[in-house]
Length: 262
Image 1 (cartoon, rainbow, N blue to C red):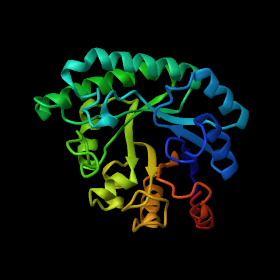
Image 2 (cartoon, rainbow, N blue to C red):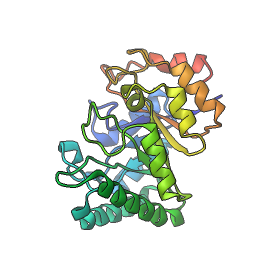
Image 3 (cartoon, rainbow, N blue to C red):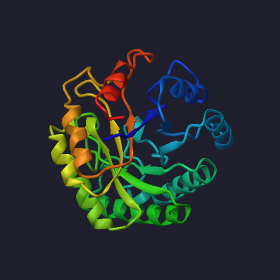
Image 4 (cartoon, rainbow, N blue to C red):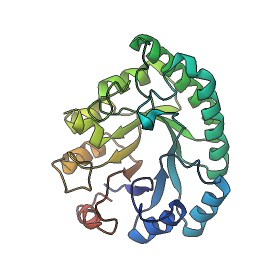
């Protein structure tokens, strides 16, 4: 049982400029990196830095509009289809240079005045289109459920809702991004989450819960979660997406290595 570790550069090594975080992740012992939104940096500059350190880019997100500022985002909003199309085009341009293994579509929040059924219909159509667009590049598309305690009114918030959306879209290039923290925040038993999405997990992110800190800072049972991942044959990446109190505190990584997880 061994997985590769990716560092989420949007949350880790934040004392450094984004480009310098690539080297910091390599020095810390990570195998690759992911970035939530890379669009503030020219793609070619980021690609040069990735190649310099021999670090694959595992994943980045499609632009999500105003989602991080508390808005509904783009993917599930009927009157923002032109904006979503522009976001998809920008992500495609970056992907053609950076060649990530996966791109993530964030469902966003339920927009004011829109019923949930309509929002989910729009989301399903956008997910299918994104999956089709990226398939010729050999880049997988994932979709993520986020807990409604941290992000109220999020369209998909648990493994059941995420599984139902995957089943609805039913595209071979679409899979789940499973975030241990978000599922635990929704009081899900992580082995249940894993089993619910078995065979359709394209990417995994983790942070401890509560607090969204490094492993060992909370109460999440990583041993049980990773044993469940092993039992369903997951062979993808594990991405550290936690809020670091000290970016040089990587004691958890040695613990995981000693356990044979990474």
